[in-house]
Image (cartoon, rainbow, N blue to C red; front, side, top):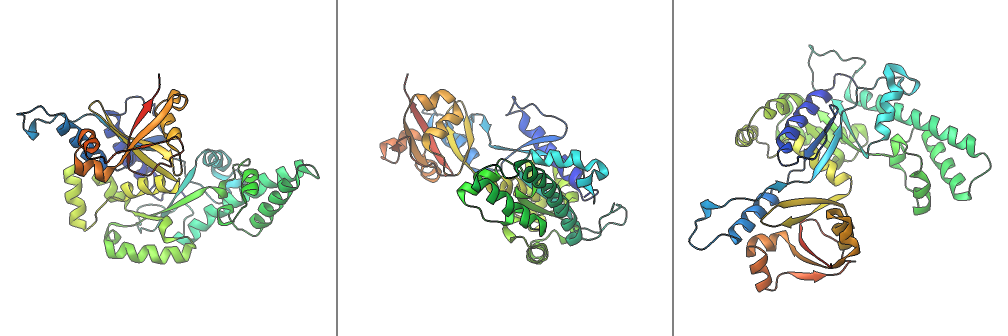
Length: 365
């Protein structure tokens, strides 16, 4: 809804984006899009390992020149606040709902903080606010699926008619599509419709500064998981005011600030990680003197599919993947020592990649 802290959070994300641009020069950024790095401490360690490995005899570790680090990223789209009646066009709702249709995951920001200086714009309390937006998406979906149902009539396949009837019946009861189970055949039909309530969701509770302490956040997560009927794992707690202040600090100052609050990681960092995980994404890593990089793939991707993320030609010319876990690579001290210890292994094209695999692909000419 309007005035829940979306823009404040998004501006803090843009600060992270600006810090990223130096290492990510090919990202074309529109004003309402933020491309932000996925926090990954492994990359710094990999950079140190490959630099130390290439250190000439007689040079000290402080002479290390680290290779550029390129993290995995998540793209966030800032969509203006929705109001009641959005599915019928209220507040330019149809336009904003169409923007949601293009994303893979919804981060639904819910106002939990109290501030008499910030107008509520139709907002009443977190549970009602969440329900209003869910209802607007369900009503929009109900309109879409009614049109599809009418156009199909008695045509289409049995599985299409069955799936559409199932979707319609549940939407009509106010049940979002993400809460339903579908067979692979039904899922294939559902995927054609790009329904809003079918999208995965992360609920972002924007709390006041006084509530941004570990124990209080645990209580809020439990409370709102029950009140909103969502899983605790889908809830991220942030304080937009604190995130705004953190955005103005350097990395060391940010850590000190968070330590003072007794919090290990900022809310925005948790949000980026949660988005990555909820989308079913993992990172494999490449480590060399020229660059250390995290590459994004879907969980369950094979070695040949991962190679294709680096270059499509790698899929055609794939021979083997030399693989080692990040932990082994970091402890042993790089490719050369890992090979001497027999710690690396050669995997074929059907090997299922694991998060944190450090890989060097063997590609034919």
